[in-house]
Image (cartoon, rainbow, N blue to C red; front, side, top):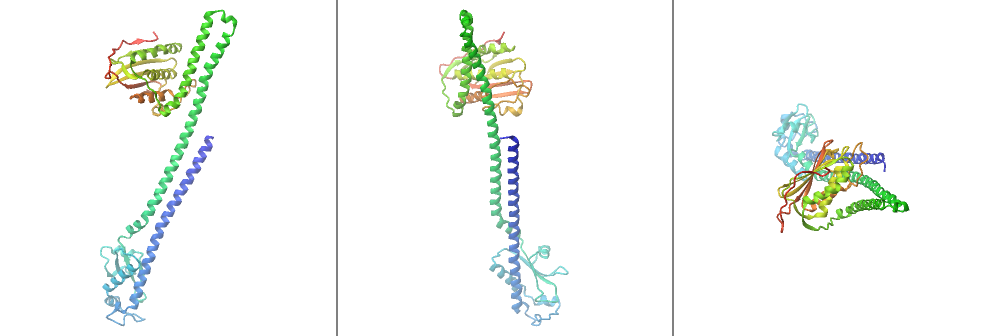
Length: 442
């Protein structure tokens, strides 16, 4: 799939998700507003019911039967003298209870013109009571006055929040799940795409690695079929050696491919033995000497460890060293400059492989031990590999109870350090002493 198509799909999905989130937020906001309107309507219905009961029950204006005539010209003071606050408070609580509004409230009667509270229990909520939307006119009782009966609920906001909170929690949980699922899907999609590209790169590199020895073997075999070549034992031996070496190289590449399955399943068949790690490293360096020499480089060995004994799988240990050496040579600048140092550190045998190659940026250092991962090499296009070497090194080191670290700077080289538990404390262990620094290619 083309990158432009992938980018378009991600963009469309992101826009769709954003739209869903905005619509969800809109409905949540609408739900809150609807709850408020429903509560307002219930309160207004209750207040109107109270006023109607006051109109029907002359006791509310008892003490002066003339007050409730159709033409009421009494002054406000006279009207208030006729109001029974205790009975009005009782009516309010009775009506609110019947409407299932059990919240605490304060009430008051005020002049809408002068904004003066004339009766009630406003207390410290005077301003809130004058501006509340829960009010009704008392014009049916006192036509000549602009009187309003109002109530205010100090806990109204908390009440609204408690009613809408479960729905808000559910809504935001669903949104969080959607965002998490979308982000995870995008992450996995990009990861799979990158893995697919890495596998394609692996196949291309391995194809190249296979073709080269196959072509060399084919050419050497063809030469051996020539009768003139068979007349010379030296030439026959040289071509036979080429076939043997290239066959070993091809076998090594096949083994690397098979390592993928073994490493993924963790099915390591270790043959644990006591062996001299210094001697094993020296053997690897001697085998690698020709490769470095052909590239015009040098290989230096500094065995500073005083305890070279390991209790591990010698074959896997040698593979670890060979992979690090091969990696150092591949990413050299011009010619390889490789130094191998051994030392002891807190019960571990440490092997350090130094090179002065292209180096690895901090961005890529956290990925280099992943399977099939290869550091982009910029203008260097002739570096071939499977992307399994460092993955193998890390996996084997950890399987043997150790670990591997890397220090690197761009254009200044890298240092790979393998730490493995020393075998000096195991049964039948003996100590080995280090030799002096030596130049392998010298």
